[in-house]
Image (cartoon, rainbow, N blue to C red; front, side, top):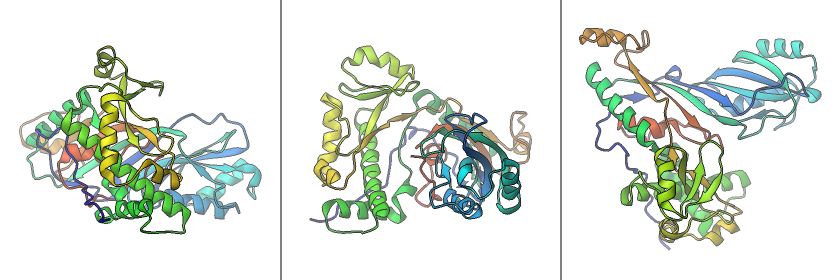
Length: 382
């Protein structure tokens, strides 16, 4: 069987609105990420939560350094989500005090300050280890540089896109960074599922198959956007409540559509697997078509021990905002005083918050309208 042609091209929900162009993440300080915790440390317990700001280090780098510093085993230090190397990121790690060579919190703090190449923000005790997924999401402060547009035009373009995204939300696409160079991870994941390739490394095998899952999820969202649009629910959708996370099947579209329009609920997209809850009726037909065209089956996902799940289909970005260089505004006759002071010349600042597992480049591609195939890696918090 010939390998399918895996296209990484995705539609825009703001396709009729011109972007601002420019460059993403010219330097680490242009991509600032702050982890939003699921809960706050309680001040007592056998684990020490350590909040740091790092540059030029992956999450795994910091985890390994902490384990070596305190003589811990691999995996003893916990964290909630992966954060990228080429960025300024703030996140929390947990250290099991009872296993560390030094159990005095003040002494541990001094060792951290003296030996870890990060900025130490705070340390607090808590009762459990920090585990993957123990976060609400991430807050982003991103600088776009080298836009070819004049400041006033750049601002006008960006504000039009911001208004549309605030109103309609955005498809929760996986970023192309997840798929490797020219989609190589997708090809390898497909080869593993169809039996034309074997890999002994369990972690790598699962990662590559999950890349193919993610690709099919993107295909579903792209097909939905192209065929039925993004403004309405479908009969049989598996919907999710934004506030509580509750899941239910849409049996009456007329009754649920007002809740969708009010941004109370969203449809979900499939991450195919043996235990995934399937959509029904019209929504089920759409995802069945995607799977039928994929060249793989649920049985093959089951053989690969991939349970599957469902992913929020629509991202909400009510706090999405843009700002440009105040000097550039003044030079063009504007007097907007809300802009940041002294950003890079010709730059725009974009700020927003996303839930865990969502990619910032999903929003930035709409604002910029540039090729994201060469975007730096952006690790997933799932």
